[in-house]
Length: 95
Image 1 (cartoon, rainbow, N blue to C red):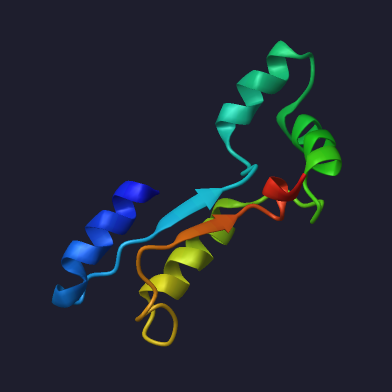
Image 2 (image 1 turned 135 degrees about the vertical axis):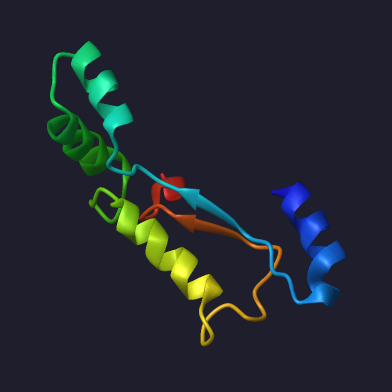
């Protein structure tokens, strides 16, 4: 996070924005391997974990991360947003 702030400060004058997206519990195949080791399926494991740890009680989809990237890159969204760390995790950091 600190490195991206330094980079953002150095390239802002060139119209380049630099931000970090910190994803939460995102549905992916990697969770399937963890779930298997615990005798569960990916989706059952994710739903159980999210129910306990994420205030929003939702598993993040890859498209949710993509929506944030689209906002930052879009004409109406993140033009003046740079050097930020954006948590896209449904409040996971709050618990």
